[in-house]
Length: 261
Image (tube, rainbow, N blue to C red; front, side):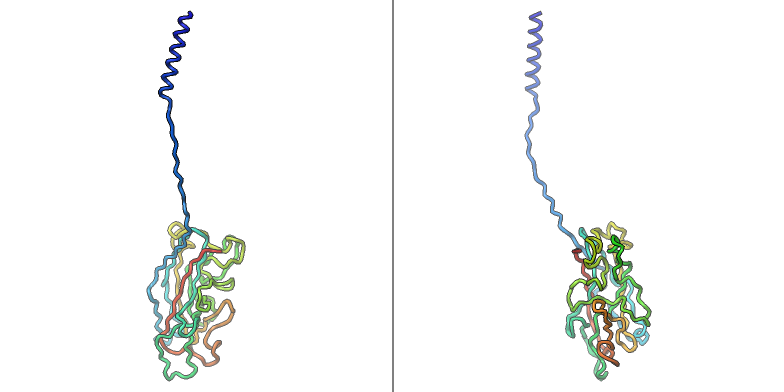
């Protein structure tokens, strides 16, 4: 009996040594992974290099000329954002006036004015500014249809700020989002992209129309400064009998996509 117990003990010891010989060996190393999430604001624009308005028929002066779908704006962003348009020029006549390239004004009289306000440009965006959806607030934008040529209300007049890119205030228009006027996040568009948010029906895709309405006489009756709440038509600014001097004028519309603050 004693010898049998000894045999079992030897077998157990041999098995223990066998298992020890094949015990798992382990060594550990690690690598650190760093992620840098850079904020992205990307504005893609499809438009002609130059949009021309040629007024060579009297009815065009009275009814205006509209360029439909002339500019398409597509937004992609990883942060909350605002989008606005601002009128600018080279300032050859003044920071808030069109540049005069060619003067047809010889012999037109002292009432002919070459100071045509940038706010004479009217915009219309394809869908409203939904930047206030969280708070239920309503911010002005360019979604109002162009008014009839006999209605001069400045509802679509382009935002201008003394030749600068300074964002509009609470009183003026944004295409999307708005100035910081309410609780955080209630006046901005959330991060996203037209690529994943429904394309041309989304809040990241805007089709912009342009209109110029000189009027008869050519005083640009819809020119309006929303911040100052004042009309900028040529008669209001320069006095009775003023009218736009014939010639070739140029300016540009700058679209600004900015992180909401």
